[in-house]
Length: 249
Image (cartoon, rainbow, N blue to C red):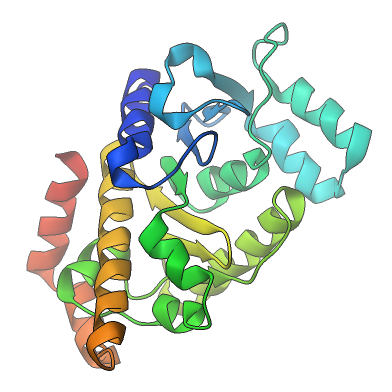
């Protein structure tokens, strides 16, 4: 995986026709190795990023922010110390902490965080938890997992990172694997991919699922897949094979 592939993912997610983000919304990251990762710099627009729009940061100092519960000037100092290129004027996204923990603790290779209109219509409603907790068609299970992890609204930055860690750990305890989708109430969508292609596919399917769910509510009452059907689809050998093919396309 290369920085070039992260640039390509970011521009695709930022395309205005998709309505996933506008202006400076959203952020993406890619694990480089066990020591560091790239993340979009604060204030950069996904639609127009290039390789100079990202900051390479070390995992250690960022994760230390969470372990030591740093804030204010101490946190700013830790973020600057985490930059591989100390002379870079760019600052990592304010959400660098949750990117670090998802890449380091939950096995993701690439993170795509967006604010798609169809998804946020639900996350800003009283149906948010219901949408996160159910699946409505087979390919949603195949690409997005048996359900989404859900995080009640928290302030972006360190408080949100703690909430994401709790939700992802709870999901992993229940299913024995990390979530593919994390939904943030009144905020947006996080896709945990093995690579940029996988992160894009998960995002696209989550957005489609949100649109279908909203449409089902408009014409009647959504009919959800049963827990038995979801478990069967998630573990079917042919669907596992198909999912692996999608990850590389």
